[in-house]
Image (tube, rainbow, N blue to C red; front, side):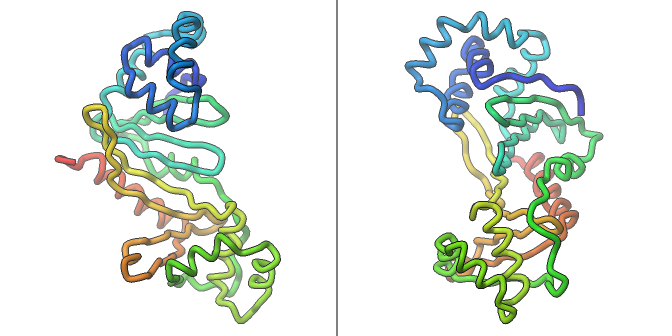
Length: 252
């Protein structure tokens, strides 16, 4: 992966506005809950030149803005502390956009580089070492019981963790779920065309230290939510394959 260029929210939206990429600029403001459109228009009109100058309106930046405009397929990875976008350019050449603390860091990942290596580098290892007695078995919950997990008090979670009659896999999942603020990380596969973005697929998962919990909603109509633990390398192999298929998929 090459050296990166960094832009603040304001620098990026101002640069996009100046190049006439209004839809992308507005999407950025909306997703990151930035200042209202009216305020941003005033702000951009008054400060655009200074922001663009400070961002370094170079050929490199021009290329990045053009790629954001042209790229139709992208993947959004939402984590607790930030967001990453993978913009597919052609085949498996990608523009990587990492957003954290109000700063956008752009870099390129070439076709010859391993996407899996990049994913592994971004993966945030959380949780604790897996319980010795834990088996890699699928947990099956109803939609109601899954919703109840969000309502569990810290004291109740502690009781469940201490209860040896509770399956180790469920205790491990509950611990990791609580540690992740009772939220799931997710990958969204997005397709943009004519100023509109279509959601193709979402992969929900929960990171742990030695495994990844994959949450399968495919059987939710039958009141089933399946939670399956995978070793990290197994999960990333499957995710990489999904991304490669998406990148070359035609007629979305």
